[in-house]
Image (cartoon, rainbow, N blue to C red):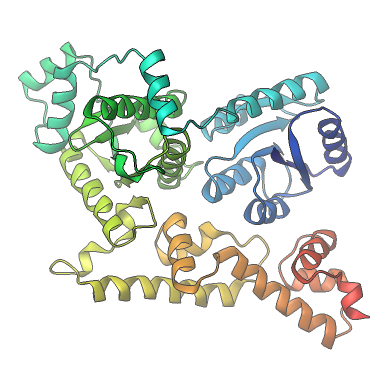
Length: 443
């Protein structure tokens, strides 16, 4: 069963859509509603939301901004956008961020139900056990092996530093339909770990090829709609992806490129594990201008993947999260621990100073620490034992309790002081945290 979050700054629309879905007969467990993006983020952080239905224009935080934050928190959350505007720019941004549909107000009931039904159906793919998965792949997939010369050239571009446009390389690229125009590039590498399957199954080599082929299909299915990319097999049970931007798309500052790459990495890991049953490690490079840097980008993803040795329970690594330049030689375990402790310490200080700020986001805390939201979340929980946003809520709730018991401030004044946009939403969070309402605690 699925959990759905509906977000619209018109409460009547929220209630109407919730009522429509409640009586639809769809496989829905809970429906949550929020009247602004900040309330929605709290639900996304605290509840297991599968589908987000959001308006595009909502005052302080737009639907586009909410989508960006939602994808940082849970990249696999599915999104349907509703809007009173048929503006192409809004629709383009929503689709680029992974929206599954873009519906125009006034909402047609049947159209919305069809859209929700379609999204839930595609989320409901069966997860096979290993034996069934291999059998299904053998029965239904005819592996179309990538052209060996094309794969060899792409791997050489990454490993042999031949990215300069020498005539022979250019001709080979043209013959193999390789289009590397850029001029901006990033590399994502996926290292498959067949030994990590739940039943510790030992796969034959031919079955590993089937699983690698299935993983490559997941990559292509995820990236085909909105990305200019090349995906291919690499040695050591790896899949490499070269992502490129032209000047126009890279110049669009409406979407943070690094956050988008991390969303891709986390979604790839999530879906490969969900549908194929084994783990993988994903390395993500920085973005550099010029195809001559493909070799360097490949070295970056290889270094990023190495960090899985230090963090066995983490699977997506961005090269820029690790301060390679501060060490004159390979860092020791003590150096790495000190670096990580410093990141958590600074994040803790920033949270204590700003937890009452309306609209505080994980992305903001991460930016202040010059690390990605993904890595900060992981480190914070590993070092403190508590989820970062749960810690923010704890600080807010303890302060609100102190204010209720020791001052005569009204509910709306307290909610403002601890960072909530509306008193009603504050009361919901308070009751969920303490088990009683603010007024009951006051009594």
